[in-house]
Image (cartoon, rainbow, N blue to C red):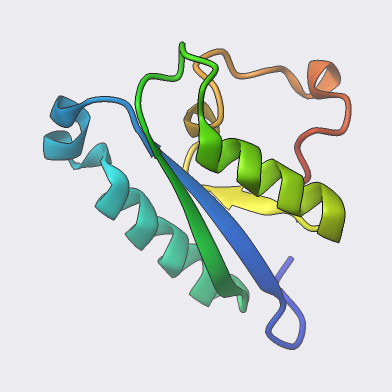
Length: 102
């Protein structure tokens, strides 16, 4: 469903390795994909949270900040791919409301 009246969104991107960055799956490619998505859906990107590091590690300060802001504002975060949130992507029934899709 397209955003109504220029709704705002925040985004999260993560790059696991230098190799990933060179492969076209890095931060810049994710940011471009999110900008294209936001434009197509009529969203305005307010902020992009960025982490660099493996998804197998729990220390991702930008993700923590993005989730905190999303909880406070009751607003979704968009990602280019679900595996940017976690190495092990949850099934919808396991996520228990953690993921919201427009």
